[in-house]
Image (tube, rainbow, N blue to C red):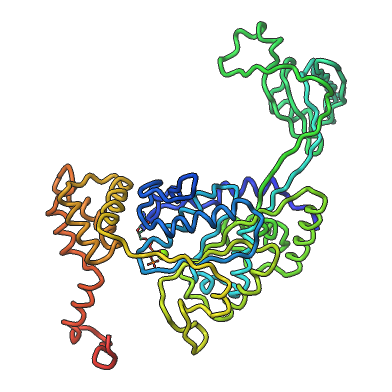
Length: 459
Ligand SMILES: Nc1ncnc2c1ncn2[C@@H]1O[C@H](COP(=O)(O)OP(=O)(O)OP(=O)(O)O)[C@@H](O)[C@H]1O
Ligand SMILES: [Mg+2]
């Protein structure tokens, strides 16, 4: 197996990292202070202080990076901020710790087996921090001399003289090096580094000693000191990639382009085994460290018994991430069985979980969250309108009230208003039904709809 090319992954992940926008874009973290206590309103988070504090404790464990295979369940009523808390954790972790977020139902919709989808999600959540030592040559260019062959055709040859404050050496140049020197427009007086393994040339700037000769150069010219000591140096570079990225790149049938489309298909077990032993080797040699990240499975009650048994097993591996799950279900049937269980999760898995529960919001908190959402969506709203909207949030749901912000703003703009007022809210409230009014409507007009079963089963 060829050595995984880490640089390539690094470039690709810049492109593939998904920017989360929408319902939770106002969340910037968990809003905790140094003692891990939740500030009442901070980083877009409001109330739900107990759950946020608990999430903060988990976060500390993750940051220390010493533990693997812990699992957490966030359970509570719909719209009490479970997904929001998970997003806050992701934000607080930063980009160096892998965080993968999937919905329980997603694993059924991909073109692969459930366990393969889960395995990929697990491996996306484990980072490998790879340290590489490369040899470089760093010095000030004294002279570049390029000889064209007398016949006019054939390879060019040349010589490059580099110096530090202490030494000077002449290097022979091959065709490839000449090309990259020309491409980078390297000239005498430049400070450059040459990566010995790849031949890559980087221009660091111009030597201070040349500052006076080049008055005519633009202000953007960067001046640097002539390097000291030896021309040859060792430099350490660190990359963090995920196990999944290494898998995909080394999977002969897929190739790294699959990372763009996300269409990676199934990855052969033997590829994974090879990667695991390679990574273990790197760890032993001190070249790599494992960074356990987070796998967040939202709507976890959508998983079935096979998935749950897979999770049980996977959590016991020493390369397992921290698993965070969320559900709004009470005691319900475990998919794929006839048995009922709390949250639709088998008891043996529940037994391994730390459970964080969320509680319904008070009026004050709903008002705060709506205010934050108005700011996030750049919507001006009058105080009375906000009070009405808060009432709606209390009586229907927080989600419904949040949805009305955008629509009410559209109505207000249509009438060329400067801010959303009570009438705009009333108008969208009558235009769009919330869940309970919609149910009421269905009950009243059931005979007008097709496939009506209200008479047979009780709603
Ligand atoms: N404490 C909070 N602070 C700020 N925003 C919040 C808070 N709680 C919820 N929200 C926002 O309210 C909306 C609904 O919350 P969220 O989606 O997190 O609920 P949930 O508990 O995941 O619900 P469900 O069980 O239906 O999935 C989201 O837009 C979320 O960002
Ligand atoms: Mg949710």
